Structures are given as C-alpha cells and as structure tokens.
Length: 366
Image (cartoon, rainbow, N blue to C red; front, side, top):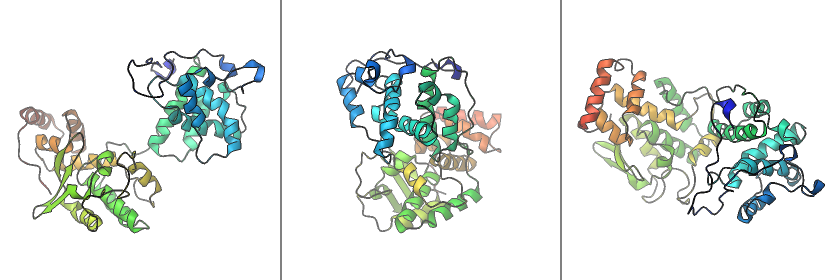
C-alpha cells in the first residue's frame, strides 16, 4: 500500500508491554471496501468499529466533533469511523486524533458538496486535493490532514495513480527573514489589538528571532528564566536541552518591555496560570493573532534567522551549537548557503574543524 506515493503503508502491530490504553488491533481488518460506511443493521452489516477491541470502541463512542451539528455528525459518522478503523496503525494515533481530519473531510464531501457516502468516491485523491487546497487551516495542520486522508485513499483505492499536490506554503521554513521582514514582524507584534496579544507576540518574536528558541521552549519558559544584568539578557532554557542563550541586543527592548510586569514564577508566554501539560499553544496564537500584510510568523524561520545572524557575525560555531541545543553540525552547515560570504569550501572546512575541536569563545550578545 502507498506505492503510488513512493512509500509503503505498513502497520507495526501491537507493541508488547505498551501502557497506551487505546492500542489498535495488531492486524489490519479485513473488509469489503464497498461496504464502508454502511449503517449497522443494513443487510446484517456490522461496522468496522464493532469489530475492534472493546476499549477502542469506547474511544470511538466518546468522540464528538467540535462545532459540527449533531445531525451532520450522524451523516458523516458511519463512513468516518469505518475509515479510521480501517487504517489506524497500532500504537500510533488515538482514535479521536484521527477522527478530527476524517470527520471534517467526510462532512465536507457528503453534506457540503452532496457526494454519495461511497468510500471510493469520497477518498479519491483528487477530492482530497480539492479539500486541502480550499481549506483555511494552518500549513502544518493541512499537511497532517493530507497525510491521514491519503493513507485512507491508499487503502481504499490501492490501484489509483498518484496525483500531484501543490506546496502548502510559499515560505520555505529554513529561509531566514530579511531585515525588512523583521521590521514588519515587529510591527505585527506591537500592532496587536489587545495588551495580552501584544505581550505574547513580542515575547514569541524576541525569543525565536533573538534567542533561537523553538515553540515548545517558548511556552515552557517562566519569567524567572530571563536574567538581566549590565551585559544584557540571558535566557535560561529548561527542558531536555538546558542551556544559556544570550539574547541578541536588538531584541532586548521588545522582550523586557513585554515581561516587565510579570511575576517570577508565571509562564512568560500564554496564560500565566495554564497547565504545564498544555499542548503547543504557539501555533494557535499565531493563527488567532491580528494579521495584516506582514510575513507569516514562523518559529522555524525565525530560529533560522537567529542562526544565520550569528553565522554572518562569525560567532564561534561550537558556542553557537551549544546555545542552539544542536547535536549535529549538519544544521549549521546547511545554514551557510544563506550567508554567501561564508559559504565557501574554505569556510566549510574551517567550520568542520572547529566543531570537531569543540572549543571557542563565548557566544556574543549583539
């Protein structure tokens, strides 16, 4: 399965000793694909969900799609649940997680566009392409939805030739921002409609473009992790890659102005009292922020901008790797292409030698 798209679709099987409470069946379910989505009781047909283990059936029974009226969920449910039961790999995703994109897609096909609830029609890759291209979801979410839906399509239509998909964003995630784009992003941060949004936007921008933090690190940083002295600001990054990162001088004012009234123990970004187990809130904030003609705030691009800024300033690469929490030199080497004066064979050899030696001065702060 999956060969039209150049990859194999496999189920790893159940993992022995797994503590996951909703493991999937160890083997794929056999099914007459033409009967997917047929309501129970019709010609003695049982849904695929009814053939799963009891605890997995409970997971399906508890799921209710947010924002979808009950009558529409009743229409989409048989096909959406059967499709998820058919392709869900063991110990890979929860039922509820897979049902989110599948339900949205089936509802769009059957209720919004009036197509029959026929798996071969609904999960045709051309229809998936139409749905993804016309959605207003964030780029990462669209990629996740496309991946799940194409897996179903590969099982339902194994002989269907692959169709081409357009790129889901026009901003390569590794390309650093220009100075003009950074100024526009500063305007985005300071131009938010509420004080809380301005604070979060400023903190996000300063910690990614000014200290190279990723979204997980941004949302798990407390005010006490920001240290200020006569030399500038140093960010103490907690977590699995603990390190000290000097903030670039050009971002100090934006950050300090945003956190000046925060207590030491509260989260710097997002709700000060939220549960530490809260999943990624950075993407949700960006999606709901006030937007104009500025570039899309992309934490990965902003981190790349921070890396390239230091490479252009010829910061010692070993110190830069420590500050970035990197374990492989390949990431720094790939960034050199964005610093034309340094992207030469001589500089690459020099960088590799310094990284092997692992020595060098401290990371500069400006």
